[in-house]
Amino acid sequence: MATIRTKPGLIAPDRISDPETRRVVQRLLDYAQWVSDNMPTVPTLPGYRHSVAEHRDLVSLYNDEPPQKIRRFYGTNKWGRLGWNVLPEDVTYPASVTRDNARDIVQLDNDEVQPDYGYTYGVDVDGKWRWIKFPNHSFKFTQTTDTSGDITAGRVYIDGASISITSLPTTVETVTTDTRYWISVDLAAKTATWASGAAWPSGNWTTMIFPVLEILCSADLVIKAYTQHRTSDISIWTLFNFAWKFSPTSSTGGTVTQGTVRIDGAAQTILTPPASWTLTGVTTSTKYWIEIDTSSVTPTVTWKSGAAYAAGSSTLHIFPILEITCAGNVITSWIQRRCSDIVFWQTPVKNSLEYDGGSVQLDGDSAVPGNTKYYGTNGAGTKGFYDMTGVPPSDPSPYEEIEDADAADADTWTYDGTYGLHFTWHTIPAWDTSDHKLYSWCREVVVSVHGQWYSVGAATKKTIAEGVAHSTL
Image (cartoon, rainbow, N blue to C red; front, top):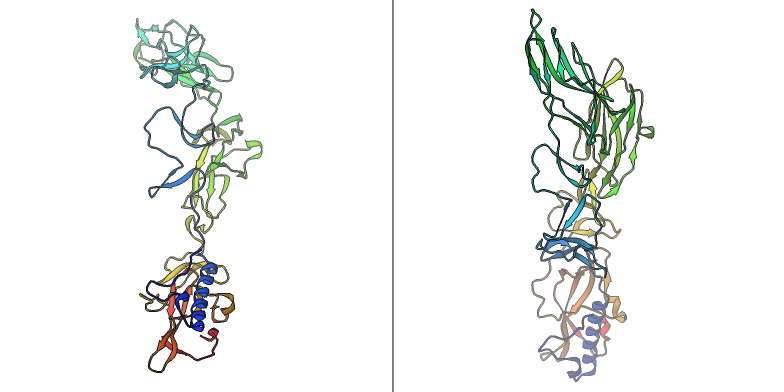
């Protein structure tokens, strides 16, 4: 609370000898003190909360610091203090992950800076985790006679395990007609078979075809040319748990592994998903996607499908998931367009901010509010831009700055409900030596609820007659 004092050089009330004058001056000072105690204040604007703070005119994490040290994490320590803390020494790592104390880092067990080509990370024959080179046995063909040749034995790996190849020959004998050779892998049974024929077969969702060799023969029934379609081992991985993964269960349907959609870190409910995430009766080529609609304050997430993807916009965000191709009313192939969760971030709003057409603005905002406007609330509490009337005086001197009044003289103070507080502004009473009467100069002053000067009326000289109460000033 501010204490109202007279300006330096002016006579204090206790130094005025005339009792009536002293009482008038004291009452004016009491008015000023009362306004100082009861003047409406400007609401405090919302600031930053929790883990976000303002530091040197920048917004950063609370107790943030530049990345000067390694092995740090941001969070609370054992005393609950937010900041960058040392990574605990007693972290438990899985079997394939170890900590190199010499370099103070966490890495894969027996990791290497840059493994050479043809290596995969896994468990070696000695049971230890390391980078392992797959032997490149290949399926290379070497012609030995006009009608035969040798095949170098290759290998097939499914999820890192070597699979025996059924019917794999060591030589190709008596090739007199155009012949193709391939490896057929059954993912369900996890088997591999060497096969041959006049044309390549068609694969499906459980059988994969890997062309290896193509031999062309001349009219006199001898080998005239050959094409090596594959010269390396076959490695297939099926263990990855993809989100949104499509797994066919019939020629017209299958199941979808549901992924998660997060908006600003919070998991969202997906509207109109297929029953039990199972696609049935798929007989025509179809596309599937996730839509995030941010046109309203609360975004919506919807599973959609159709012959073509929907067109996105600033408020409609499209995430393609799956494309299924059909022929003859059955599924012939599919493309997985997405195999990870959807994480979508938008600017959070609260208090006087809102979303309008996908953009952030003030509640009651205007593209062109006009000149001399202020943003706030009117008498009905509605937020928006309103007129700021009046111009504050550049210098109120020589009038005394009276900013308060007491309740006894509140009849001279009024609040108009829009602009602010009206009161009469007086100078310190003085003695007129010409007519030997006491007088003061006064003006009507309007002060806004924000403490701004709105207007000052014309100066009027007021003679104080003997016996007149000070409340009539």
